[in-house]
Length: 204
Ligand SMILES: [Fe+2]
Ligand SMILES: [Fe+2]
Image (cartoon, rainbow, N blue to C red; front, side, top):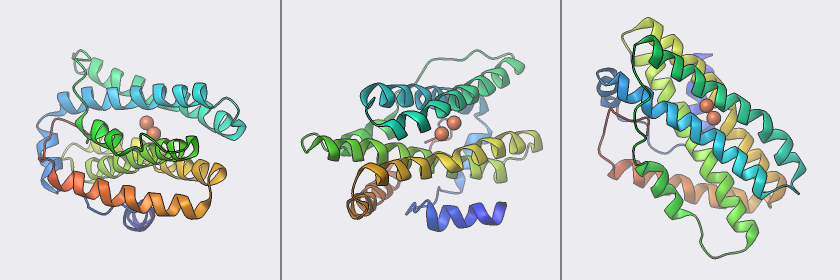
């Protein structure tokens, strides 16, 4: 499994810049912040899927495929919430999500409805891919064996999500256009990761 996912991270996820190795050490000493941030990431994944269903009711495949993802992401939120509770911690406040906001800035504001739809799918694919890569880091690099296992479960669940968003994009948009735009997104995300400070209090 580990080998397969390493290959995923290199080749299929297509991420152009691996996470700075220092990140996992910083995250380890700020687990409360990481768990709070992670909880909101899962919550936002669920609400974004709901909103995509609401905005695209005519896209039958999307509605069918994203409906169970809403349940899955909400289940993830609850798993993180119970981990916080176990530690006697509250959920905490939601932080400003710089990573996601920067990605949203790259979405085409003008353009056709199809181009806007494509960007929405690719934004989600990218967030899922990067989250999967970060969970992989945690599942391999944390000292605490229980937390390594905890994050392995999330990594395995999220691994399929990014491909689903790419698959949905390719179902509704010309495959060549998807590939071209995906390459632009990967390049943009690389620059974004490169310019951002390494912080251990957040997933991205
Ligand atoms: Fe999730
Ligand atoms: Fe996900």
